[in-house]
Length: 536
Ligand SMILES: *[C@@H]1O[C@H](CO)[C@@H](O)[C@H](O)[C@H]1NC(C)=O
Ligand SMILES: *[C@@H]1O[C@H](CO)[C@@H](O)[C@H](O)[C@H]1NC(C)=O
Ligand SMILES: *[C@@H]1O[C@H](CO)[C@@H](O)[C@H](O)[C@H]1NC(C)=O
Ligand SMILES: *[C@@H]1O[C@H](CO)[C@@H](O)[C@H](O)[C@H]1NC(C)=O
Ligand SMILES: *[C@@H]1O[C@H](CO)[C@@H](O)[C@H](O)[C@H]1NC(C)=O
Ligand SMILES: *[C@@H]1O[C@H](CO)[C@@H](O)[C@H](O)[C@H]1NC(C)=O
Ligand SMILES: *[C@@H]1O[C@H](CO)[C@@H](O)[C@H](O)[C@H]1NC(C)=O
Ligand SMILES: *[C@@H]1O[C@H](CO)[C@@H](O)[C@H](O)[C@H]1NC(C)=O
Ligand SMILES: *[C@@H]1O[C@H](CO)[C@@H](O)[C@H](O)[C@H]1NC(C)=O
Ligand SMILES: *[C@@H]1O[C@H](CO)[C@@H](O)[C@H](O)[C@H]1NC(C)=O
Ligand SMILES: *[C@@H]1O[C@H](CO)[C@@H](O)[C@H](O)[C@H]1NC(C)=O
Ligand SMILES: *[C@@H]1O[C@H](CO)[C@@H](O)[C@H](O)[C@H]1NC(C)=O
Image (tube, rainbow, N blue to C red):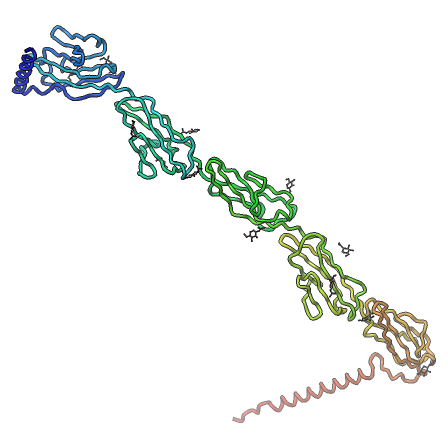
């Protein structure tokens, strides 16, 4: 019965409101508030209606408890709402707070106008748990570039949360393949790149409020890559005993372990510098470095640098200089060698001019020795053997003395002299070493053993054949040359013009005659050819 009456009144009032155009609900719908914060229930009361209301009452439906009531006698705050509500008696707007979870539920508003029209409305309040504890969790603690798929999950406490991912300052852009976001809480970065997670990455969770996670930080290991090795000095030929330093670097996170390889074999040294002090020939070879990242388990090798350790050439010496070397009889067999070091090229010079091969001068294929056969006197001179390799050169100078002669033995002196004249017969020869001289008179050895044979105050007894005997003990060669000398009586002609022999005088005379004849002939010829001047 009561129920029926109530319904009847309600329907009646609704009908009145309808007809006055005032039955629009004062309030309807849902609203959210955050635990500990205030919420405001607005009303649809228009400005021109303000002050038209006699009573305003807000009731919490679940327990049917009055929240606040305004009547002409004043405002009465319901039990449990002391200090937590504020009612604007002009328009019925209610502010409640701080909210507790018990405040969730439906509230109804009942306002009676001066004209005894009752208007109602209701609103459902949801008190949300505040956002807190926004955290990002990762499926891994350490990632490997290109290899790891990082799955980040955002979690938070609070009700009706929505999530967002932030990269630095802007929202994360999901491309659906490399970066995907699912269920808004899960950010998946497939085959992560080194810079993907340096953002830093944040997650926000919000309802009416928003909270942000701590910056998320994940180390993405990468590399090694861009490996580079340098050699100082080098690469190439290096002087034995010098120091060679290799340096290696690679981009890697964490820093790569750097190893060294010689001819494909790992050396015991590790680290960015390989220092080879006092390098030896056996250390020649192909060097490279290799970087290893213990996190990515990746290796990377540098290009190789080839090092050839060469000893500097020293102690160059020529062998085969036997003495004596006799022109026309000896063979020169000279060999040039270094006490230390190996030569790539050998150069022979004679008197600073390259020694050229010929039918007499034959080099061995590596030019380390030269055979001169037979030796000639012109082969005497200063020789130089130069040995060189990629890093050094050395040379030795030696003299080669060829023994020869005597040859071109000549006796200088008059053939006729007068009694009491003095005469010196001089014997010359080409010889190395210089020839020893001896003289014979009419075939008999005489006491003179010098190049000059002097006769003072000649007598007729001195007429005869003087023989110069030139000999070279080294070559074993002896040459004899005769010289005829006549000693004449005073006044008797010696048939020998001063200075010039008969033949020489005759030659000069013949020459002069021929020259004169030629000049005369040329002059005559020129005259004949002289053009005759024309009478016209
Ligand atoms: C919340 O409402 C209470 C009671 O109406 C009021 O005292 C307080 O100042 C309000 N706080 C805020 C932040 O509005
Ligand atoms: C009550 O509401 C009216 C109309 O919106 C406003 O003018 C007035 O300032 C409010 N009063 C208080 C105390 O907030
Ligand atoms: C989506 O995320 C919520 C937590 O925000 C979780 O309870 C739910 O299981 C997730 N759904 C899927 C499909 O992962
Ligand atoms: C974050 O931003 C940086 C720089 O723009 C970008 O390289 C990186 O890929 C981004 N990360 C994600 C997960 O989108
Ligand atoms: C990332 O972590 C490292 C050490 O783990 C720290 O030094 C760095 O500041 C962190 N970066 C961010 C953006 O949190
Ligand atoms: C080579 O290095 C050693 C030390 O390792 C040093 O004593 C020596 O002087 C260096 N030699 C040269 C030529 O630099
Ligand atoms: C070094 O490398 C070159 C070419 O790469 C090769 O010809 C040579 O035999 C190598 N040397 C050694 C000692 O392995
Ligand atoms: C990279 O991924 C492959 C399979 O995709 C795995 O076998 C390998 O162990 C991974 N490397 C690292 C360093 O995690
Ligand atoms: C050259 O070798 C010879 C013997 O073959 C030796 O007597 C001489 O001392 C050496 N000279 C040098 C400079 O080594
Ligand atoms: C030249 O001398 C070397 C050694 O000194 C010898 O081996 C070589 O056979 C000699 N050559 C000739 C043509 O005698
Ligand atoms: C030497 O020989 C010449 C002619 O052959 C001769 O005339 C001369 O008498 C000789 N002298 C002596 C001292 O025998
Ligand atoms: C010249 O060579 C020949 C053989 O070739 C030899 O019998 C002679 O003794 C040599 N002469 C000298 C002076 O060495």
